[in-house]
Image 1 (cartoon, rainbow, N blue to C red):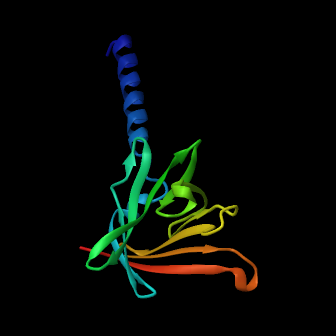
Image 2: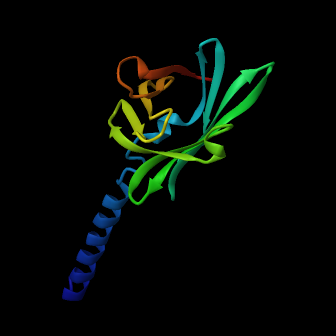
Length: 163
């Protein structure tokens, strides 16, 4: 084999290795795709539906909505998104009738195989939003405020996937 051909072959192999490694990069490092779909929970006698659209990795984001089932129909309560801002994962929620209809941001503070937790301690309520992934069809979501003693408040949403 000629010297020039060996150089081209090595260059081609190096390029293939780099492309292979780049393609192995996890496009969903936080596991947000686990939220995708339609979820149902009963919270204090009210049926709650949370829907998340498929994860988009360019730009890295997932969006959703929360609805209450009332009078035989769905009532939109909030719109949510989880997206990257300055290399940080942010959960943004806009709740109808709250905060003058302005969105509120919560920063990611915990991320592992089972939990995503976002916090905004300066917000009145909630100050945290947490998702615990039990399996592909079961999520426990919690929202709450971290007060002292009796001033702490928490709501638990025991979500199951809807078909």
